[in-house]
Every structure is written in structure tokens, then in C-alpha cells.
Length: 187
Ligand SMILES: [Cu+2]
Image (cartoon, rainbow, N blue to C red; front, top):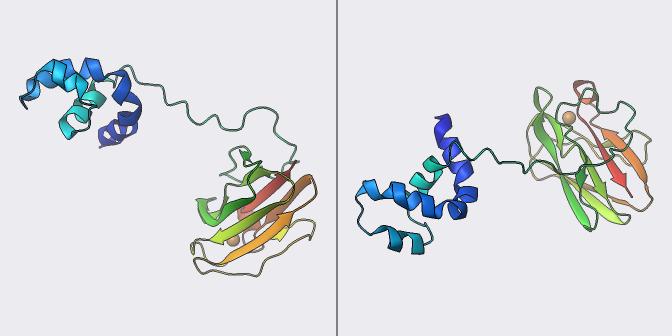
């Protein structure tokens, strides 16, 4: 049912833009109410939402929400070459605390950090939070600056506060060769 996913995904963006259009189509559902009234109501009921989504399937290819951190990516010197969930650097500058998932689905199993790379401001505390998947993981800085214990249970956390600007690479000791690697960019 790929169609259902499409409907759900498009529903929210489509609602306002095509409310007027959908009322025309909704007329055939026989749920009473004339077109003018339906347009006033904000499209909250199921039949209206459904017809709204349907009416936009051909015009709605506008899901450009994944252009997160554009611009110049920092140099990681190939650190992420074998990391299949590296998807650019998530910009969390200005946040005092940032959470990174340990055991994110990646690299052929639950062998990823999510997000793999994050950009923070100096003084930010990064909290790694284990989700309990993929066995035992740790968080070990490539330069030895920080290292967590090896843990596998959901809810386990490790944190490190980054005071100095720079690029900090880290990996999971048991799964580094699989691509379980991350980085924190402090700037
Ligand atoms: Cu691991």
C-alpha cells in the first residue's frame, strides 16, 4: 500500500493549499453539506482529508524538506566513507544539550549513531543515548579525548561537554569496521 503512505505524507502539506479544490471532489461522497460549508470547515474529518490527498497526487511532488545543513561540509578526511547513515552534518548550534542515538539502524544492522555527524556550539553537552539495539556499543574518541564504557541496554547514556572548537571523531570499538562512526563539529 504505497498509496497509503503517500496519502499520509501529503495530507498535511496538501490540506490548506487544496481545500477549495477538494471540496469539489468531495461532493460525490454524499456525506451531505454543500461545497461552501465544506470549504469553511478546516478539512478535519476523514473523508475530506482523503479526497484532499487524492486530488494532489499528481501536483504534489514538493517534499523538499530534507535539505538540512547545506553549504560547506567540514573535512572529515574519509572518516565517513564506509558509514552508510552519514547524511551531512546536523546543525545543532545554539543548543546546550544534544542527544545522539547509539544503535541507530545503519551499516547493515543497528550499527550507527544518529545523527552520525552533528555541529554544536562550544560548551554544548552531547548525550549519547543507547536504544538497546545491535548489541554492545561504546563511544570512543579517535584521539582518546573521551571514551564511554561498553554497554548494550536501552536507556544507557554517556555524555561529554565540548569546550574547544574542532572536529571530534569517534567510533564504536566493536563495530568501527562496520561503519559505526560519528563526529562532533564544534564551532
Ligand atoms: Cu557498536
